[in-house]
Length: 299
Image (cartoon, rainbow, N blue to C red; front, side):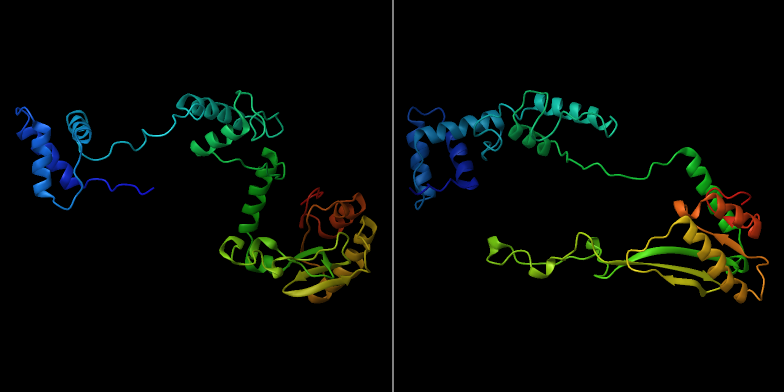
């Protein structure tokens, strides 16, 4: 069934103006229709009910345009202003709770007596979005103070001091390579648009237990020192770290520093194998206050 075209703004204004001119006449509607037929001979003729509604709208809303936007259709029974305020209040209250606190507002369950589908619609209406809990390292105020103190100390070092500082660390390297999925995107045409969807190259095969090797390397005055490639699946413990540092690394550092360790500063991270009592005591004996490490005796 075809839909009749609506009257234009010019035609509606003419109908209202004609009605006001002929309002006192006994057959005003017939007169308005006759004048409309002369003015717009190619347009369909409005009936009396249409003219009445148009004039009533003019006196009530002071417009001849449609005012049904937002008024037509079934009135919302759940997604109401009241329920939106209830959902917003509960979501705000739960957002202030600790991450491990019980959460009663989810897409499948809530304590407001609202169905999951309606709850989801309300959440979208009020502009809220669910966020996953992110895990971050637990930092105490003392940790931040230590970081600031270390940063200030590092900024106070001269370029020559940094050249005489040993930086070292170990890391695993998998034989299948390293892939960071956050930095790469593959685009493909959607299936709904006639494409094949996700490209075949957007899949990275990864073994659950990949073959890997550990590599240790230090840097002193821009020169690699103490390089060691471990055997496959070999780990580094405190004894191995002790032997590696005091037999290999310091040997290379001594050679690069003119045959001694004068003015050399040692740095390391807080890995457990780096912080054994034997390692820290020996570092204290060799470097004294020039040890930048967690649990350093003097540094």
